[in-house]
Length: 129
Image (cartoon, rainbow, N blue to C red; front, side, top):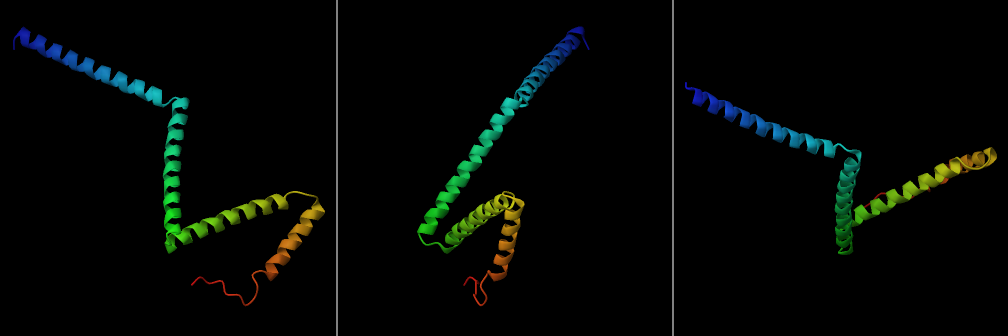
């Protein structure tokens, strides 16, 4: 091999190394940018907003189908209402359970225990048909 061919190969290798170095520096700069806490928070906000938008669209579609008479959509809405009601009732119960004097808490516990003995009413069929 001649000195020219060797010099040309060395020059090509140096150019390839320079290109790789530039590509790696760009990738590293992108990584540094995305790893910043502000950027991470912003990306999470955008992802959460996309998910909320999708859920809102699904809820609107379910509502429209329920209004049109779709039984499955009506059951979905009813179960959502029941779940929300149960959640609110649980929160109120926990707040009530942990507030007031010791005597008031004891009376509340006694009341809820007695309520459990009489509800649900005997002889009532709660099965869904």
